[in-house]
Length: 309
Image: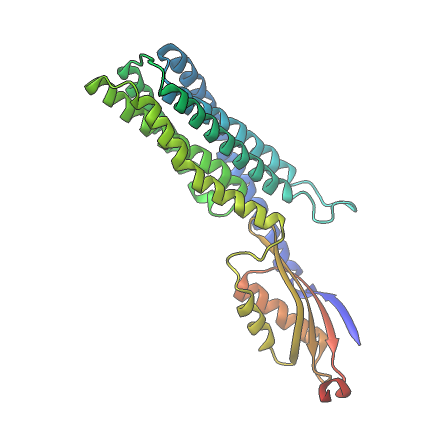
């Protein structure tokens, strides 16, 4: 005999889980709006300074800021889109919109790094006069501006891949602003103009590994891989140790969106065990030991003949 069931007892706790994700998303949106305002204003300032000074480092940073504005805008749209209710065609709702947005943002950032590397390489053979003082001024302003944005998004980046991609964009701009200051000081002290291209090259190289890492996280979620925080063997052992459980197979765990994991599986129980009581124990174990609130378990009651076999 087989029984399909969901954890009815945990509906209230699952509801709280949805509420927590929703509250976090609202807070994320508020902070993303603040960062968007800061980034948009500074981006315009940098573009003006970059064209006036002919500095690739400043223009590279302005390009990063443009990427920031686009990334944060996409993150905001995706976060709002994810609040749409589930439908008969989209039974999980639109939570994955945030993961798709994160993937798009990281791909754009990798493209931006490639463009900066290309431009920096060509600048090495060109003699472009770049004034040092404006670079130092714009760089210092950039460090302060991006530091504020990094502080705003830092905590949320740990909970959401969507915010993490935007946070990475802002962090990269702060590094670029530091590079701009270094380039400006070097030009002022030595007159070595090529430092502008060298700094731009180093900034782009430094950003690629971390950006790639975030992209791989997004791909892992889209491929419905097991969340990194969960050791499937440990989960299997924990469920197998529950009274009445004699076998587990087809166990799957995946991430719907950041902060929302799901589990499905088949559990074989003793003939004398209560299916409903066993389901409740499994759901409790998933919630409290592994922070999984969405469980779908098929219970299979083993007959005496099956156990003997």
